[in-house]
Image (tube, rainbow over all chains, first blue to last red; front, side):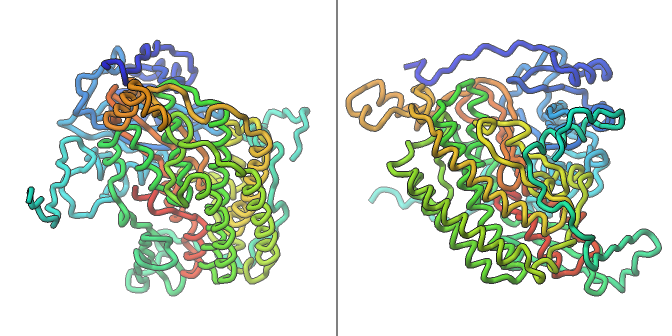
Length: 183
Length: 439
């Protein structure tokens, strides 16, 4: 019975075959490039976040920021990221698309729980404005340099950040009656 | 489009080359459109900005009928002219991404299908592709083609509804009735296949939920005929219509650079003359096996976006016809019992099947540790799904990149300088689905 739902897959070998990823690693100390299921991913230090993004936009012709999001790793805090990267509670993840080169790249930065801040990339890609506000709203990560960092999905006076793993579900009492019990 | 090979001068940038590549076999909808009649250009900076007491801030929405749900737009007006517009969203936020963390991957489809409720299968598809990438499974040929067929059906339905609501917003009320009419026929077909008109949860991890029913080919051909007839009617009604052009040509223009910078994808990006379609540029499913054109415009205005969506219906018709002809036989889902539940009949006779069934629907299947971002061209643009798995049957994080969420930002670039009535046309031409914007 134990193996009924078990699917074992070998861990992906870490190869740096991607020229852009390699260029980023060479240029920015502390960044590590990995291959995640065929997708090019670079773990960059938090301090270099904005610089790497600016580099991608200006030098490597990444024309569009497809997506910015973040992950709360409270439940799997003991995870292994890659050699050379210290896992923190939050991960800010951004996907970029280069139309002229027709390729994608993903940047990931580790953000510690006691200082959840990172540089905003909205000055580089204005399209990151909404998603960064969403990350701030739902996960409480502050983007320094964002022109309008306000809540976007939750009400303005909301307390807490709902996508955090320690945000309590059903905090607001709902007017359902209690189960009357067996008759 | 010229595809000559001697064109290699030094000034040719890679973007140009790509444009030529992707536009091979594409159709330019309007090549020689006259300059926008009566286009208004307003550039306000510093001193020329009117005093605060001369401008007025009004809120349009969230209950305004032309905001397609619960979009609220704050507009600063100078007389009748909009100086600035800021979309305010969140009125339909239902915490679906949080919900996804409580649901197993088996249940996840039910959740994501409700995001973009006009093309639910795109959501299911992008979610399934992401989970399949993590699992490392390959779906059978028939499932691939059936998925493509279903997604194109919904692209048709979604664009037909756009024609209806766009007509309604601009005042062509007969268009509204026509659009709903044809869409209903498509939805009837979808219902006969999946059992539901919307929120189908039919594309699942490992394939599709059930095989295509008997006689689906003939039913589809009948519907396609109706749709083609409908589109030719809309063409007659609107494309050359001077009143329609008055309301849409030159309204809400946006340039390619602005669209790219603001993260806009889909018909909005294509309307600016940038023929970017993920189905062509980064083919998934079997899109590289079928013939179809990418529709793109040249002026980036409401009229172009209308035309693109109108003619994309016909491109979908093309693809669906090829799907009918070339639909392969065989399994419609992966025959891996760890992912796909056993057939109902097997449960009565096999203990193994019973256990598999029970485990799948209580605990779900475990997905290896990893993270992935999958993308699909939905009717509204690039829909992406970012999943992080920690090896349990529930994702650590499931994030959907809703195209409407990003497209809505481009409104700030389109609206300034136009009239309030044009703002309605512009919101309509963005075709935002608030369920997907707010999730």
